[in-house]
Image (tube, rainbow, N blue to C red; front, side, top):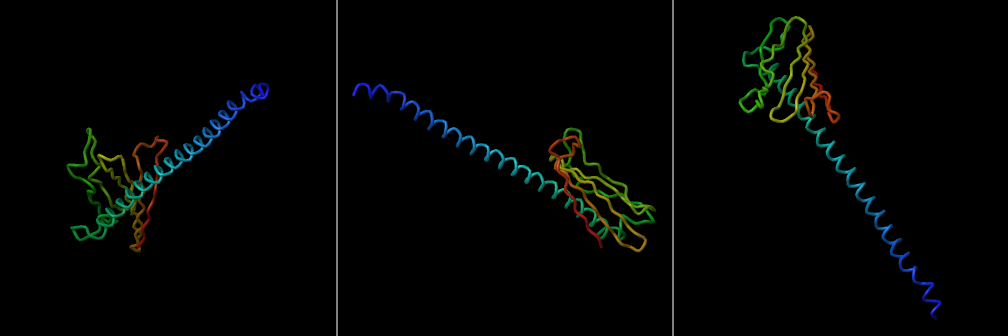
Length: 162
């Protein structure tokens, strides 16, 4: 009987090590999945911010094209106009301001203007193209950050034709 106990002494230690290793492996897998899910959720949120910035750029361009207080399109191919989008006292921070007013319209039929959404880091670049047959294409590129070198920069585009 004494010999049998001597042979079983290390068996309990082996079982404890195997169980601990299994639990550690399972925990590592769960943590890995959780981290990947957090990164994916963050990317989805940033994509949504970029889309909202692009949509806001489209809305601004449509307003100045259709609802311009002067009654004429600000993007006319015969004259130039000055437009303001998202320009108020809240849209300034740290010496930065929204780059408005923007000069648009003119003989080329292509107008490009930018919007920033301070204090948030979002921005949009909007291109309005008017053809001689009075067709309009508005393309807005929205970004979750205005820093072009940012590795996590997301771009979303919205295009409207009428």
